[in-house]
Length: 323
View 1 (tube, rainbow, N blue to C red):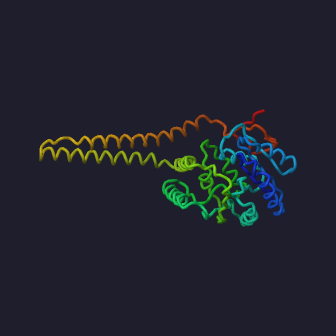
View 2 (cartoon, one colour):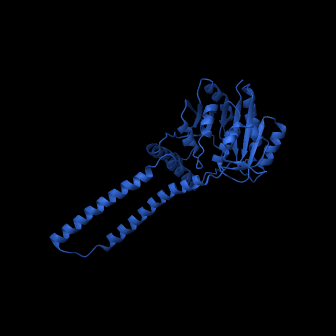
View 3 (tube, rainbow, N blue to C red):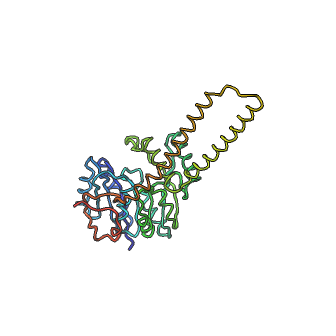
């Protein structure tokens, strides 16, 4: 019988993890299939790990991993996928933004032969400004990136075993899972669900984090910004050449006039700023190369109730456990 794994990245979720576990366990039991729940503690400091240990003591289906510090959600998802043993793996957040009642629907679509069953949330209840910028971002990134990203699609999805194995083959340090999910391909199906708003919980996605995440997506799957730097440089060279010809022509026809200091200063300032932006883009790519060449592990494990030797996915793991 098909075995199901649920991967749940957690960071400071002590307030909701018990409720989440109760609701998701009911949905998993209703499927009638054997299952495991792999909780990944991403260096929480609020007692989330203790809550996981208690859940594991009370429920034999619970597996947990705890990082030595906060390595980020991308690393937490990667760890969960590496240790998941199911024929199909569902990734969910512990904050109940991803409705557990959709698990049954995902399994139905998976049994129709799809390797990725993707849940897409609508934006009902989101601020109009956030919706506008999100749509603009996805329009821009799909013009530039080598993969197609869909607005409203995140990490909430079911992956077949071969899709999981495909993701684990991608050992890059700078991971942008939205793009990686699209990059591996395979047969996919998408369905929409109602957006879940929880006004009592403050979002961890600040404006700065959203901008940084957006830049990660923009730079992770193409080199077009570098091409743009070349085109902008050629355009500015052409403009400068045309301006030089114009200045010489005016000087020949009308004589030498008082130079425009304001124009000169504005041009120097503008071009200087543009050069800094282009250097920043180049620096981002160089920085990514720098981190890739270090070959550091994606995470370090502090505590777990799993035996790494029993997991075949762990053989190519770039992480290690602290003992």
